[in-house]
Image 1 (cartoon, one colour):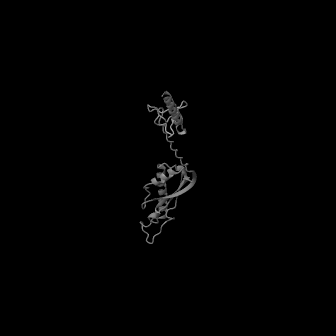
Image 2: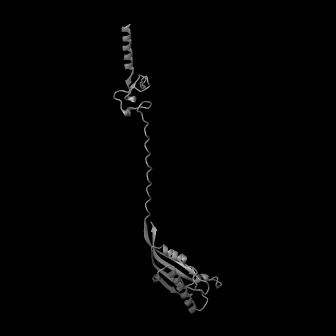
Length: 204
């Protein structure tokens, strides 16, 4: 009987040794022929002597859930290049209109705003005019008064008076003629032409 028991034990041990083996997918553990990790009677995974921590698999002692890598930061947008600008000589004409037989300036705000937008003001030329009503000498004097009134208004608005050039021609240069010469029809002739010359930055 003892011989039979010993023989049976040897056979069982040989069978177990043949069944329990290392498997590449479960490196560091003994595996069965079904490629599953062999477990002890307590449910622990059976490790080989060369088992290392990085061999640990899920469901066995020593296994740690992998920490998800932090997402790569989003690339910073490349700032658009600043638009190229260049200085350009500019010339622009504005018109200041007057009531009949008047030299009162109503507003030069639009003109001073444009001057402020320039990189550099080179000159402002003022040319005064009247309608045809009245004597020539009177109209010449009136056109001069209108030019001087606009020059004073521009100076009060911050324009350098040394850059203001003046000229006047009375009724000699009308911009409008009418079949019926009425004060209302010829209103566009009662004016001061303001020509602004300067330098302005423009985008290329």
